[in-house]
Image 1: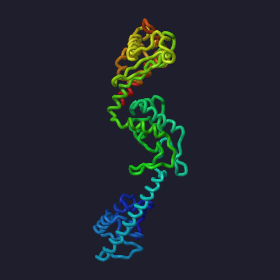
Image 2 (image 1 turned 60 degrees about the vertical axis):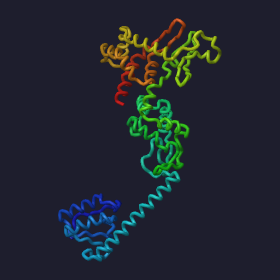
Image 3 (image 1 turned 90 degrees about the horizontal axis):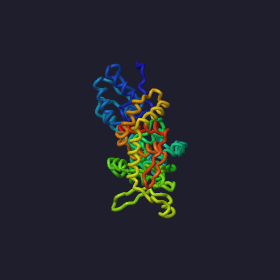
Image 4 (image 1 turned 180 degrees about the horizontal axis):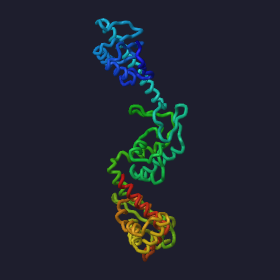
Length: 388
């Protein structure tokens, strides 16, 4: 008599016992609900010799008869068991042979650079079984590679991308681990990879070979060393803000002596015309930047600035109190030291409108509207740095 259930694992490989219907069948065998198991061919039950032996042991322990409709043999005799093992050996051989053919075909297709399915890389879409560049995402990919060359740190880059409002395809923010996978994905340089071997791909590259090589020359260094370098790098904090006595802008420049880097701000007329065009030809960058930042610290702690900042903060957050604003500005020193140089430069750009250099000293003009934004960004940047 037929049982009420059908044990059908259609579309699933017989090379494993992890099949829902087979598992259900074995549970019913264990509970004594089944006396006879009938199959079309023995390889429908399993195509693995070792797995089939385990199943037969269970059948014998529970007095269950196994019947193949198209293959006549009796497992109660030694000849019948030999016949069964021979049939199973051929079934396993066939399964393994099919697997080898599939793997060989897959490898041959990869050597031709063909897309063989899987997760579609960010920056591409699939059309007619080929990778096609998705221009919006591709622009983000190119920006990520270029920014990494500049900052040299995946942690800092993730913070910058989050600040820019950029997200992955699923809407999640970029994180350090995801960025490392992206930067090491050879799909973006137009290659197909199979078992560690690289082949020219059928798809178009998103980044150039030159850009790829620059990124990976940076990645060869240890993360600890790169993190230290990114903190030591000092961008031109006053770029676009500092002006000479003749009213012309001063541009950042540098020189190396005996392996040491020296940075300066030089008047543009001195560079383009002659040194006589300006009474101040150049100023040491570190000294002038330190002087400006020291003045900022003094100004931001003054009572007048606290009141102005409070007024600006109330426009964005009506619940903000003067005590909260005062505390934020007083903590400027501690928060400032936690920032990366690029973040410090960003804060200065928000706060300072102009720095005029003269023989007698410097004059600093602040951006009134930038104080509230700089304070908020200062706290946000430090929170991100602590979280990372």
